[in-house]
Amino acid sequence: MVQRQRLGFTLVELLVVIAIIGILMGLLVPAVQRARETARKTQCANNIRNLGLAAIQYEMRKGQFPGYMQHYGDYDAVTTDPLINGVTPSAHAKFGTWAVALLADLDNQPVYEFWTVNKYSLLSTDSAFASADGYDGRKIPNMEIFQCPSDVSNSTEEFGMNSYISNNGTFYNAFPGGTAPSSPSTVDVSSPANGVFNLRTLPGDAAGVDPATVTQWADGITVQGPKVRMENIRDSKAQTMLFSESVQARQWYWVSSTPAAHLVPGGVGSMSAQAVEASTGSLWWFADPQNRSGAATPTEPMKINGGDIYTETLASGTLQERARPSSYHTGGANAAFADGGMRFINDEIDYRVYQALLTPYGKGSGVPFNEYVLSDDDL
Image (cartoon, rainbow, N blue to C red):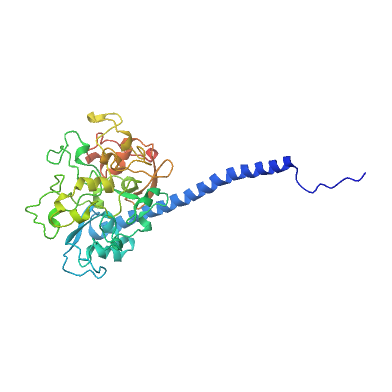
């Protein structure tokens, strides 16, 4: 008898092959995704390290770290901005964040000059270039250095995308009895022992604003913080944070959502310095996991990656609670340090460790337990 040669797969064999392919795909796809996230995380780490190095270079040149808000110049509405045609922006002050101060050190001198040379206007009503909040979009461009590739929240912004915040120390309302600048606690919140980036401007710095009349910001802040120098970092520079990630970070230039109202001479005093502080930086609260010095237990949103970082914004609940590191990386966030290094900070660290990372001189700071000493094992 002649046997017929089988020319194809049986149904069972075909199903087995399909099953094997499915298993391989199930193994390969997560591996590819992990590899891509590792690459994004590495790029993010490089970005934040470069921000740290730029801040150190700035401190070496200027003898101080930048402020979380500074005055960079004024536009007088008389000088013609060579980039603007057909509209005449109002006279306005150029208040901006720490990021503006670092632009030259980040190899972006042209954008830095838009902010520091008075012939350029930051505001524009030209629909071809104006941003949703009233800035001239060419003066607030997107830059890779300010964007973590994993930060999908940036997709909601058109200009000035940003994933990073500075170490702004602490604030008035973080302390019992410190409910307002007019009745502050006994702790000097702007002391260099408490944080690295201070408020470095007042409304009277703006052209057209009388410093004798407009003496404070809308929240009652009447004095700017002292200069913070490298020499003020008395604890380990490798354990003092300069920058960290935040998925809720505002745009790199942000000091107001309504700049056309707040940057003009008649509106400068309407800005809240504390809102800028919490919107541009990480903060620590007078809180302690062991309730030392009568401090309350830190709430979940105060901690690294605390709260629902996927849906909450800075406006969700108390603004300052969400002024802490957060990221879309699993298990923590990248941070830059005063020695020029970078570390990935675990989001399960003790709140005392977090406070120690933000305070340049722990024993001189206002944290509830200022005798805490960091060790490498804490991180």
